[in-house]
Image (cartoon, rainbow over all chains, first blue to last red; front, side, top):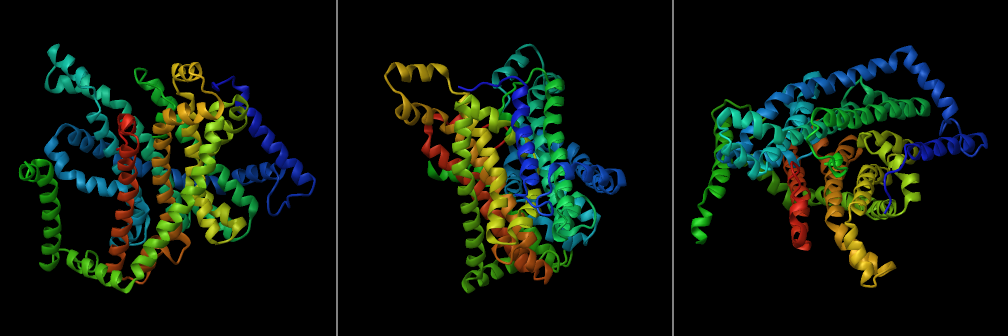
Length: 258
Length: 263
């Protein structure tokens, strides 16, 4: 079975792809206006960044993403913990939560636009909802999945009430809460970009859409690269932070994608 | 026995809460506290739903979305599984494909859409391909990790009993890897559904996403709610239906599928 190898293995194929791409462009197989070669794309991206335009769009997208995440964070964790610990609350609210969880939140956009109007608040509210539902469900799942024997052990050592929560339950559920935050952030990024494609003038999604509609391949690829780097940073960066914050959690490659 | 199960808390509390909420909604609208223009009473929504169902329009849109979902899922499933299994088994394949997959996977799925239609135009293929990309990557990663995490003893035992090549793959590797493959399929279907609906909202006339967007634009609010309801129904089917299917197909590894936090 293949095992994870040295770090040079990580660079070989991306470098080969870029080289092949460049060579195909030089050989005239790919037309530069259609598929811009890396040697033209690099300077173009640098130019866009230097001009400040791309930074502005990135800033708008990051602002929307961050604000929605922060608004959702505390209520979602509180509700998730409550639902995890109280069976009655869970039975009462689970139908609503399960339905909301299963609906792609982008589908709620028209409803929110109807009530709040077509403006920034609508966008933020829909994104907040995405983060909120995901983090609530993950937090609840985390509490429910806490090993009963750990709880029993805590009780036997005399922990009850707040102490049991603070030193036993919460640390055990924390890895799942964190996973929920990472997935929530990822889904919210998808939503923000999607909404920007449909209904915004600013932001990376809007820039990407305009580039495609005006047949500017270089802008299109540049925006795509910036969005990609953003996604990569969020996914792998948060994973690193999580490993650093919670050395006691199990690291599994599968958990990356849940 | 049956009666006591039916009236147990597991059933009564969720049913009662839902009924109370729906009744409260209906009552608040009629009492004038909720604006019917924004929140039409549930009874109106249901009658619109029935009207659209009888007229056949509803089936057209629901069928279109379901068809797109299945088609794009198959476009992701077959190559994704093949690539993933190969990546898990051969070091060379892993070196070649794994970095690319990991590089592309975290890119927000919907961002592929403008790039895809730049080349394919606003065609059905463009929609399907966009909805297939992230599921494909997800399935590949998950299938690779399914093979990687196989227990070596299982393989050795298989070999000692004389299985090799195709037999080893079909009788040992595949059944052992199947539960993890299924996790990938379930997640991929969920992602595929989100992207399908999003893409339909942006750029399609037919399908539930298109129907939803169109009814919002011409302010047919009841129809908008019907669209939302059906998308929710499909979403529930996609999210929980596959889980139920997995329970039936693979009763030997139920726990793994009910992974933490992802229910």
